[in-house]
Image 1 (spheres, helix red, strand yellow):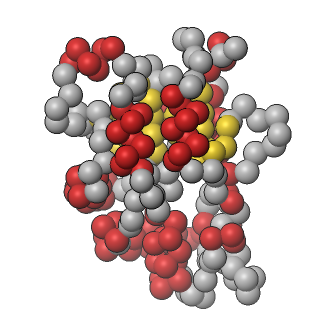
Image 2: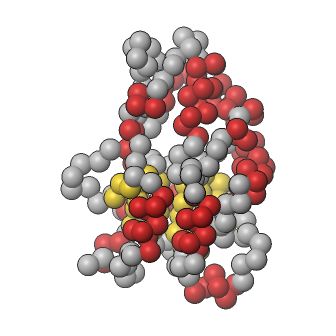
Length: 215
């Protein structure tokens, strides 16, 4: 597992602030916009997914307005094209740097991603280019962010199943709302519409030792 401490953070400060885990793609970065473009260019049927068509986390399960979807076997090539040629095209969500700086006053922000290994350096370049503040950066296999060896008090995700994995470990989970991560009315995962709402929720989080201890 790779991690990186950002410059300017002292060990004492790290010990006094609880850590939170923040996903990069479709939480900090508007990855979906670029990924759908890559799918249109590289899928055999030139599948043209609109944002609202992406109702599953797995793109190959989604159909465009013409009823087309690409085969699961095409995903590796599409993902490779995205990693090799398009990572630096992605834009950050509006005002995300501003909100992360506010959040960093209370929490140590750990970024986590399941991007391919070949995308690690461009990911670091992208974070630096957009001034994204963070304490550590973790590259982990898909679906394993909850296994990072940190005592996270909260996690921010777009992947519903990863969110439930975090929650199973007693971690408070927020989902940045997208068509692919709807939840039922009694779900323990809290969906937020934007970073302003997320920042408000995090700064008012009445946690004890873990999410299951919230009153």
